Image (tube, rainbow, N blue to C red; front, side, top):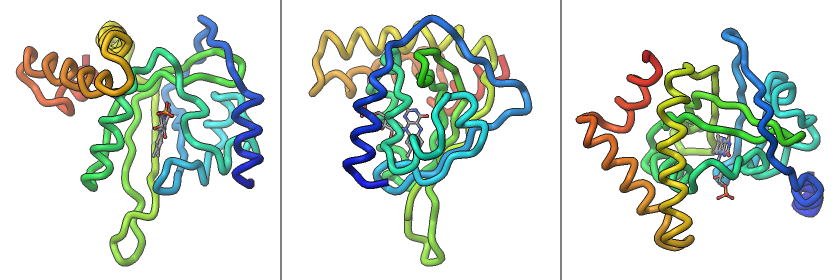
Length: 185
Ligand SMILES: Cc1cc2nc3c(=O)[nH]c(=O)nc-3n(C[C@H](O)[C@H](O)[C@H](O)COP(=O)(O)O)c2cc1C
């Protein structure tokens, strides 16, 4: 897909979010691969089934095509900062389907290395999150979003991350420990 075509797809899909939820089953895994900029290079069938997009609509397009407006920018800033450090990243993510529905996932994003050990892109595998995790993370993301709205696009995401880290400190755990503790809640 050319860049122009990818833009056309994104423009056409100005999706209006609804309150309808799509749920993954216990044995479903959503997989995608991107280049170093987050441009999608591979999606599995479950990705297409859940998101409602076809393969030609997804390949060559920035992964933010399924970004849900309820997701704080800080969550993605943390994702990219963690990947830039060569580390894998875990997060609960609310995504937007083509028809405006949403779905929650527990996502793991890892660097894709070539034979020389250089990062050539990223992989993401997502599975169904626990109900308790979504109950806990929803108000936290809402607080992050409110902070971002109040602080503006320049300062907002960093302040939202600071809020998330403050929450982890109040729970006496690291961000990763928070994710895992919610997974087993
Ligand atoms: C492998 C990989 C998977 C990603 N998966 C998602 C995803 O499922 N949902 C999402 O909103 N962003 C995902 N992103 C992050 C997007 O590339 C983008 O940073 C994010 O949607 C915020 O976009 P925006 O800053 O343009 O709003 C992923 C990035 C990578 C590298």
